[in-house]
Structures are given as C-alpha cells and as structure tokens.
Image (cartoon, rainbow, N blue to C red; front, side):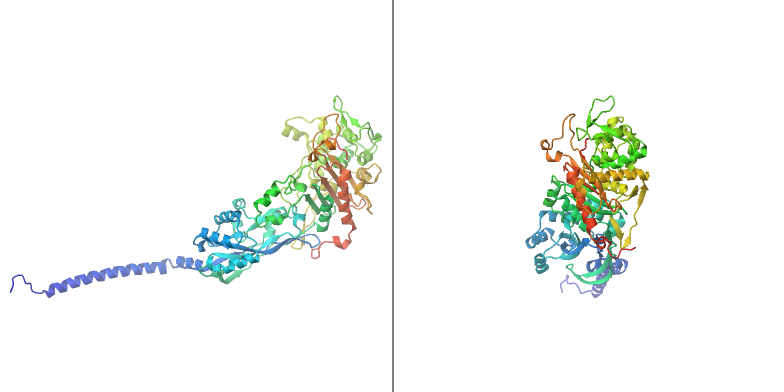
Length: 628
C-alpha cells in the first residue's frame, strides 16, 4: 500500500459541512432580515407616503372653476356672457418627450410660436399633474384630429371650459372691460388665498367692471376627485364639490342709448357720458374709437395687439375716464353760479364788451372770439347764451382764485369722481397753493382769466363734466356716479356725496342762461334742441389744443387736423324736470355748438322718445380763447 494514500475522514467532513451550513443559514437569515426590515419599512413605516404617491398616479384632486357672473344692461340685454371653448392641454408628468409631442401636435393643429412660448411660461408656474393649456378654442376638425391620434399623445387631452364672450363687441369695451389670461405680473400680487381661489381658472378681470368687480364676478372654486388611467385620461369622477358661481351684475347702462351715442359720434374721436340726474347712474359711457374685447379673452395675438397699441387713434385709451381735456366754456354756468354766490356779480351786473379785455398795467390784450364784442350791456344770461369771454374775464379779475377753486371742487372738478370703474384720472383745477407747489411760481391775475374759461392749467375728464352738469340739473345735489345698479338682484342705493348750497334765484338765473344757449337767436347751442318736444339747457365749449400768438387769429386750414380745437357740449333735459345730463367731447371738432351739440341732441331724443316701459329697470330688480 502506498505511503501517501490517506484514509477518508468522515468526522472532519461532517464538521466542515456543518460550518458551511451554519454560515449559509446565517447569510440567509441576514438577507431575510434585511428583506423583512425593508418590507416592514415599505408596508408599515412608509405605508401612507407610498399609498399617497400611488393614489396620486391614479386618483387626482382637480379644481373645478366657478362660472363667472353674467353682466346685463338695465333692460336685461346681455353684455358679458360665458361660452364653451375647447382647449388642448398637456400634463407634463404624463409626457415622455415634450419636444417630440409638441412637434406631433404641430402637425395635427395650427400651433404658432407664440402658443408654444406662452405654454412654456405656464409650465413654470404649474402644480404637479396640473393640465397646462397649449391651444385655446379648437375647431371641431382639430378636436377630431386629436381624438384620432389620442393613442400617440399620452398626457394630451382636449378640455372644455367656459370662456368670456362679449356679444356687443366694441360697444361696451371701455365700461364693461374684458378678462384676460392670468399673467406672471398678476401672480406676483397673489396672496395664498388668491392662489386658492384661482385654481382651475385661467382668466382674471383686466379692465372696466370686469376688473373692479372681480371679487364678485369670480365666484368660489370647487373640486372633484377623479380616477385616471396610466395615460392620464379621466375614467370616472369619484367625488365632487360644486363651485359657487359669480354674482350677476345689472348696470345702469342702456345698450340702446349707448348705441345711439356711439352712432351720433360717427367716425370721430371723442367721448359721450350720460348720467341719470335722479340717481347718479351712468346711462351711457362711450369712448371712440373702441376695440373688440373678445380679442383679449384667451390671449391676444401679437399682431392684433400691435395694431391696437400702434394706432394713432389709440383705441385702448379710455377717453371718457382717463382723457384729461381743457373743458373750455362748459364751465361758465358753474362759474357764473359761483360768482353770484361770492357776490362778485349779480343779476343786474352788466359790462361793456368791446371784443377784448385788458388787465390793469398789463400790455397783453385778451381777445374775445367775436372781435367786435357782444354789446354795451352784457349780463350773465347773455354772456352764457353767446359765450362772452369778456364778461367772465372781468368777473375772474374781481374774484379770488381760492374761492373759484372751492366752487369747482364742490362740483367734482380736480378730483376723482369715485365711479366704480378702475384707473380714473382726477383732472385738475388749479389753486394758489397748487401753482406754488407744482410750478414754484405765484398766482397771477392772467391765470384766473384762463381758469374761468376752463383753459390754462384746467383739465377735466368727460365723466367729470357729466357729473358737474348733473349737479347743476339737481340744483346742487352731487351724486356719486355709479355704473352697477344691482348685484344678484339687490339694488345698490344712490349715494349723495354732498350738496352745493346756492340761492334759488341764482339757480334760476343759471338755468335761464343755459336755456338761452339752446333757444335764443344768438345761442351757441341751438342744434342741441332742434325738433325736440321738450326743453334742453346746455353750454357749448371749444378748447384750444395749441396756443395762438398774440394778435393772430385761429385759422383752421393752417393747422393739422389733430392740432385743431376740441369741441365740447354739456346739457340736461327736460328743463322743467331734469332726468338726464350729458357731456360730449369731440377731439379736434373745433365747434362745440356745431359738432358736439348735435351728438347730445341724439342722446336726448333716444332717451326721451322711448315708451316708459322701455326705460324701466329690468324685471327682477328689487324695489385760452373760446368760441363756444
């Protein structure tokens, strides 16, 4: 037997086997323990987190946008409606390759570069799993193309929503205003509560009543739990909490009167404001040219906005509310009343008018628009009738500017009216303190001569002139102008701001003067009362745009059209029981009596000629120089 042959040692082999088995069992136990710990961690410790994540992939809480409140005119004509629109939206988390998806969509529907750019901006401020709109107002053909290719477009869906629609297009653009898409600028002003309220809503009031009544029109957001499949398609609604619709607004505005005023202006630039003398309600609010607010609802195109913003006629500018113009001789009735109350003039006061006026120790000659003058005994009524500048220059020289400023502010000049429309401008009626602070100069007598004629530093909006005229018609009761008449059928009461105190005989004198403007032979506003069955009281005004050198005459043909005088007219009717007050401005119209007065006449005719029931409230509402 060889010496190197070893015998088998079963004991050693058995020991080795046990050791290996023990190591294997320990290894298996350790691995099993790790698995158990991990399983426990997933199923017990982090159960709620992973269940939530799983549900978020399957069940989503989606906001439900409220229906925006409707807006009607005083007779029930719908001014702001909601109409269904189909939008193409994308859920970013459901899309693998966004660039490829956008390229494919671009072959199926019209997709501009601006659409993609705006979409990318919206992506940056979205919430997880929130559908982000790419295209608005899809056509039926485009919806069909998307539906046929749905299997190729995970995360892409066509969603229906109600969008604002303005059926009368440009007729109420500057009063009702418009909504637009929520912008980055809007978001910077949002509070946490705003973020909650606007979930599911893409639009916000941008101008007019849509902006000033945004909180009421918006409503309250609702929500729903929906189950979706792996491609993000909604399978069923599990739970729903309905939103609260926005409030319904009924306006003092009258669509028929608005159209009559707009048509009376024709193609001219200007503004017309009509006010209910008894309540301060705004019956017509026209600014021309206007624009179609529907362009802004889902986001205006670059070309459309450029056409509006670059237009020389600035249609986006609200002339009635923001246009600050020299009011010219339209202030003379108010100034005449102030002079009577201040004791500067009386009913018996007369002057000799040679057609010009000179201040003591001042070489400048102030020439009246009638160079040969208005006569040797011009009183207040004749001065109003013929728009005699010399009479008012003489009164202003003997009158204190601070007293003049006081009467103007009591009639609403030089301050915002408080109307329920945004971005109103205050105009200006100067005082001694104002000039010292703004110009660093003292008040000169010549400044008073300009101010009494509504020129120089004086600026007023057409709305302010309408409020002034309504206050005169009310014999001093100054109402706050209001566009909204009722909210959800609850009438908003008129608000009296204050009362201008004056002697009855002084009011009578001013009324006679304004009546003479329309009906006397030499009255400057005869066109305002032509062929009407009721009496009108008014005052014309023609305010310079550019200065005329001393001794020179105004030559219309020598001036560019946009440098010619503005034409103005203010009036109220009927004279014996005033119901409506009107202010008309026609840019570069040159003659208030010839151009602006006929516009006022058309407004009066439309309002006063219709049957009483047509003007009833909607059923359901609860109980320099001036040639005059």
